[in-house]
View 1 (cartoon, rainbow, N blue to C red):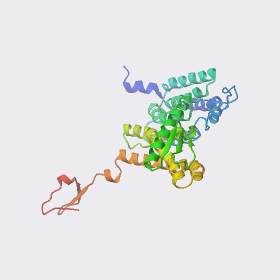
View 2 (cartoon, one colour; view 1 turned 45 degrees about the vertical axis):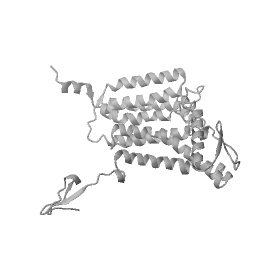
View 3 (tube, helix red, strand yellow; view 1 turned 180 degrees about the horizontal axis):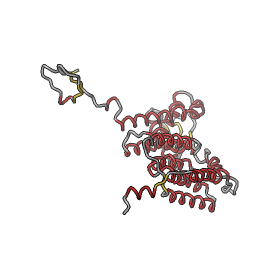
View 4 (tube, rainbow, N blue to C red; view 1 turned 90 degrees about the horizontal axis):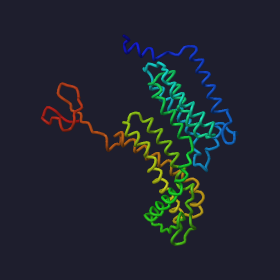
Length: 333
């Protein structure tokens, strides 16, 4: 009768020379399939070539090139956490490899670059499972599947109009709080006193582009915040949605304030072009930092105050305030 340990040893295996040769062949196959095979956009682009052309302003994905860089950094972070973990390959990873291969074939058949890029994390995770084991594959899975954020999704473009209307109403309300009277017609905001011409909240000002970039940043931030509980890390990642909406409304309000009290030409050109870089992202990152500190309990007002009690003939000890003695032999410091 076989023991569980013996059964595990049969299922697990350490890669030898043939296995490493197979890994080299897999790497070459991935480079050819994803980087060289012209199977998309009328057979003129490879999967990665299509992805590079899709990172444009029209799709609100100009930040797409940052996703692979963050994925590599998170993979480095995950690899550092594998110290002390026994790395034993498992043939169970072949199931995930096969699923990724089927998705890749479907992508070629339908000429859908999105499906091709979506299959890449399946292949990479399956390969990690085969050569490093299930625990290592589990640690590396998130950095691999983070690559999905680099894929432009058409469904997000349909929400642009809704974001435009939301940004318009938020800016109108915020401008009123700052003493700037405005009139709203659709997505156009004009001065009620005629001090400046109407501004049109176009798709680029809807906040959709900033929302997608901030989702990328907050998701990576939540993953790297390994000191937090899982629900806190998910909260940190999802905070990009309300933060981007509020920060974009404040950016638009600042444009109207400059137009009303400083100079309309400066507000409509210089400040409009630079406000995202100088206002939106710094404010959003500060809010993410504060939220991280709030969830971790590291903000100054949330830190638990410790009381040191010095005893006669003994060393100082940390004691909660409600249990510290107040007789004559002890004193609080």
